[in-house]
Length: 422
Image 1: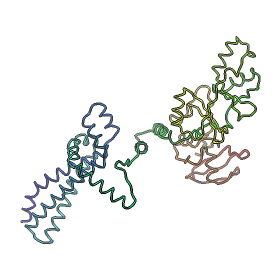
Image 2: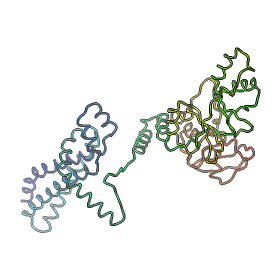
Image 3: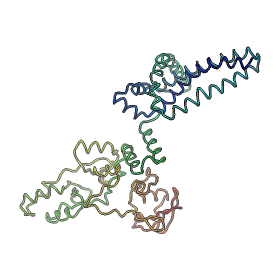
Image 4: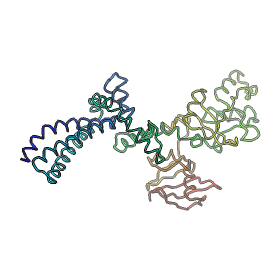
């Protein structure tokens, strides 16, 4: 009698659970589908992708509508099974058998099986099921809106306030997580990952973190003879040089090598007749709190490549160039006039020797490390921050899984460090 009842139930239950399975696959595929690919397909005229993107604009409503339909179907199937089996075996045993039977049926056919298939090709499944899911959202949408309003009203009683549209995952973090995941899987090379990171970090980094420090800026005294100014300017590897008067804090202009050469040509070789102050450009000062994204936009807007960085008191802190910002994305950009980078020297024993003023971000790029750069810009700054003192040569510190040995120090500045595995 029991077996006959179960056999009679199977076609009905499979029909109901089959519909539930379709929407279970729809929910999984919609949440797992690549938003980037969906947007690209929509631009190419794919109507199914357009429906998927429309559904994902209110993901909470979509999931709520699907869950509501699934609950109705699954509970209905369980009720039908319980009534049929209870006729064959009345009492607690019939209810227990019905519960066990429906648990297996729902788990296998309405949950695990369809979701497994959907997760294998989420983009294709999402596009295929976009129309029935859209109908479901249209039909059950008003009910879900009422449920959402009620849930928020209840949460407000406990001091939790939510807007009707909650961005659960920021776009930047979603992209960053995808890049890191594919890098760990071997699909994205370290160089490409660093470029993606650089783009995403532009809004989080200040110019003070990448600028050339004032101690390292090549400047020229404006009071020097013209011949001497030209000689010094042409000796630098860069084309823009700040001019100062009286002291290095008093920058009065920026001398461009191209302007200087044009002035020399106009003077027909009479260097002494060149008026340097007539060709210098006005210096551009920016605050050290300016983020790289904004500064890049300003460089493009002003069609400039060079800015001087000052602190809140107006004191010169350093300089930043368009090339410095681009190097945060693509890595070091060297030309025939750049000196060979010797700030990092690999040793035969597996350790490395680095200059103290080497930027942590540059070291991380070169070695594919993850040393933190939130509290310090240079390796020397990181050691001082962790040691809570200015260490002496020979001292060794261990942090972040590596050993840092101080090799050289000049006055209060750490100039050379040896880094080796613990």
